[in-house]
Length: 333
Image 1 (cartoon, one colour):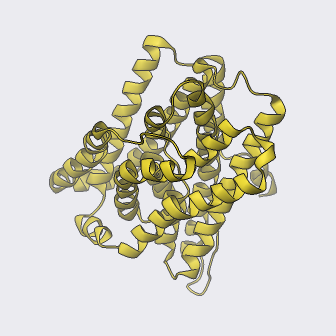
Image 2: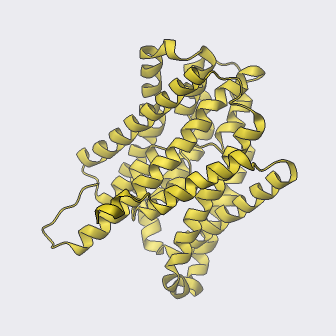
């Protein structure tokens, strides 16, 4: 048993392998486009399968779960920016101003969608609630992120693109709705193939890691940074992630949420989107500043995937142990 504890989680190994592959063999030019198309297809398939797999009553009840949505939105658009401001005041000398702009910018971004839901699924949390809350976060972020960025960063001409709304609908909501409709015919098929959903969850995350880190390597965004500055930036991103995970974890418990909702709050409330963050950065920033601003987001994105991959598996093991224990037993993460 002790030896098993020393063996790294296979999914963590797979994530590190995806990063290593991106470092030594990044997706470039035409191949990058192919990887992007495959990742998009995987996301569409993932949301279709979630739509097929989830009972309609559970989905409808999640839409009116206002306490869950309020908690996630508060973590994303209130607590995160306040943490970023506090760290910038306390640790200001550790980073140059453009990198602090990047840290503050990532703090006002909406949550991820696909990885939040995938990790919630792996951890056996409230998947319908995560679907609704993460999607709501992205829709709200289209307006709130430029406004908050304008307040925090004093940038000029904030705005957003309506194409983001179209992408969220076409790649996330529409496949989920189609899956819900097709559930009439495919419910029994989905019940027999739960492993397919789990495989799609993990594959989508691995593709997203490889695609995102390939972009970092090909663009050369990390080349101009001193090792000491890069180390400070990684430490600050890790501290920010640790703080928000602790706040969402213990905050959800203190507010009386059950375990499934706690999982959704932890994974949806602690994430920041890379897919929407880069286009938004191009709107709000220009010139050399853009490269420095997106580096913290790139690093934070990788950290959140690595840490949450471990945390989701820990939640899943804890849930399985609780189910196998006597009724009086109570397992914590």
